[in-house]
Image 1 (cartoon, helix red, strand yellow):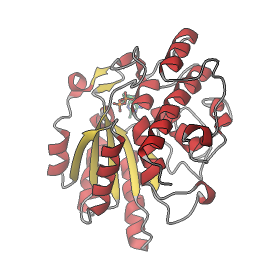
Image 2 (cartoon, protein in one colour; image 1 turned 120 degrees about the vertical axis):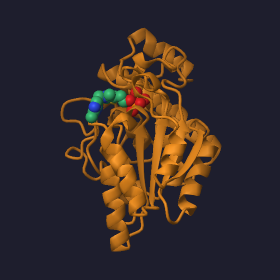
Image 3 (cartoon, protein in one colour; image 1 turned 90 degrees about the vertical axis):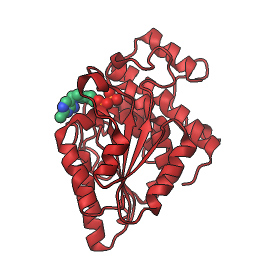
Image 4 (cartoon, helix red, strand yellow; image 1 turned 60 degrees about the horizontal axis):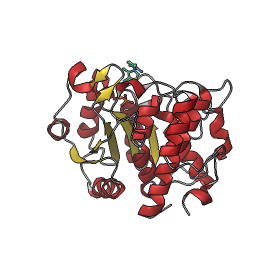
Length: 288
Ligand SMILES: Cc1ncc(C[n+]2csc(CCOP(=O)(O)OP(=O)(O)O)c2C)c(N)n1
C-alpha cells in the first residue's frame, strides 16, 4: 500500500478520531501516546511496510512490534483502516473476549500480534530474535518496533540495543516516540535518557532524528533505514503527547486518562469529526 501524503494525513486524522472514540467508549485507556503516534502508524502501514490484509501471515511480510503496548488503540485503528478488521470492531476495545485487548494479546489475535506487550522494554528483544531468524532462514522481511521514550528508562532495552548492533541486524528499524512524557511526568525529570541520537550512534546504530508528525520525514527516515546494510536504524521521532486535542497536548495526565463525554465531544470536534459523528467510517471514506 503506497498512500500519498494527502491520503496519509487523512489516515492520521482518522486514527486520532478513532482513538478518542474507542477509549471514550471503553471508559479507560491511553490516549496521549496513541494520539502522538498517529503519523508514525499512518506512515508505516499506509506507505512503508510490505504487508497485506489479504495475506496476513505471508512469511515474507514485514513485521511490526508494538513494544509500548498501552498505545494500542492507534495500532488497532490503523489495522482497521488498512483492512485487517471491520472498523465497527474498534468499538470492542478493552471488552471481555475482544481481540482488541487494552494491551496487545498474541493469545487473542495470533495472526497479527507477533508478541504480547504491556510490560515495557521487551519488544525489541523479540524483534531482534525474529530479525536474526529471518537472516538465518534467508526470509528477508524487515522488522519494525515502536517504543516510547519513557520505555527507554527500562534496563532490558539497552541490552537489546547492544544485541541488534552486535548481530548487525540491518533489517531492524526501531522507532522511538519521543514526547518527553511518561506516566509520572517528564521523562527528563524522572530519569533522563538524552541525548538519544548520540547514545544510539555510540551503541553502533544508525540514528535519524526527525519530527514525528512530519509524514514525509518519517517516510524519508524509513527509506534511510532500508538503505543501511550493516547497522540497525533508530528513528527518533519527536512527538507531542495528545497531539491534535489542545486540552490533552503535552500533559502527562493524558498518558492514561479517559475523556469525559463533554471532553470526547470537544476532542472529536477539534479533530474534524462531522457533527453527530457516531460510526467508524470505512477506509474509502477516510483516504478519498
Ligand atoms: C516494566 C514496566 N514498568 C512499568 C510499567 C508502567 N508504565 C506503563 S506506561 C509507563 C510510561 C511509559 O512512558 P512512555 O513510553 O514515554 O509512554 P507515553 O507516556 O509517551 O505513552 C509506565 C511506567 C509497565 N507497563 N511496564
